[in-house]
Image (cartoon, rainbow over all chains, first blue to last red; front, side, top):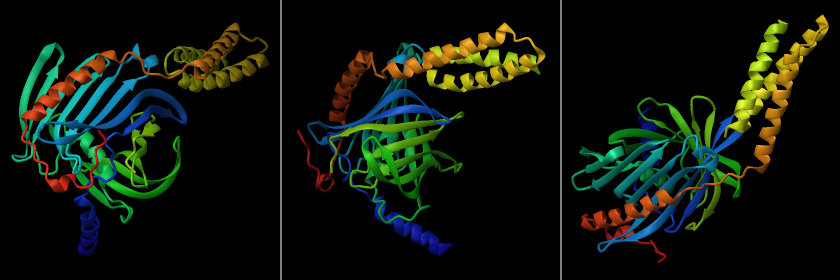
Length: 251
Length: 121
């Protein structure tokens, strides 16, 4: 058991100090989010993941932006206009500022996280309908990130030498609470995508506390490690995110 | 038994027609297939006794209409995102506010952090 623990520690020690060699500064990935029920797909929304650089007087940062918009046929029933963005260190993807602006079927919420890595704290500002503002400061761990930078961080890890079953726990700050997520490497798999047939790293994503699997992620087994297919569980059927187009890739 | 299948066929065909006019029109296939199976069963059971009720034919009609609408929608409806002006305005406002906030932050990026990064400006 101790031997296995050391082996796992060794395997992940190669990935813990991961640096960004996969994410470009002008990258745009577009996905189609669908609901899959027994093979019948219903397109729900378009999800876009974009990166760009932002210059401040002190530094040049990377802006990670994710948007989810329902297709027009859904707008009269349940309109979603979600925006998530994070300003991060371009190399280590350490977050400095995170904005979440969601509008889901009339429910509005804006959340702003300002990270202070010296004091390991985050100043949060939550705004709801009718300008109801709530400020709160929360303490975080050393490696805690927001959801967007965590998602992008997955691409910076070197997965080439990992053995299937190896897992890593992430701390994510979501809704002003620190939650532990677990990513498990399941092995390589070739899948057919709109970008062609791709050899992918298959990862399962779940909660570290309950050991449940909430979704599966396929990252291309090349230097870009772009997520080409994401499958997640919902009470009836499955949700899917399939890549539609990818541009501005780094490698 | 005949009555049960007739009622089931009618219910399934009503669901099929409702689903077909909603954005989830693709899912209308499930109640439509169920309606056809129940309808055919009810039809044969009725035929044995000699009298086929009009309600079975009506459920067939609804099912066929549902399938026609579903097929039409899946062929001719394009999936596109519209009405993004408001969120784009919010986006640019957020960006301006974020840059202001970032200016006020004490950001230290080591040279080692930026090694190997090339920015396209």
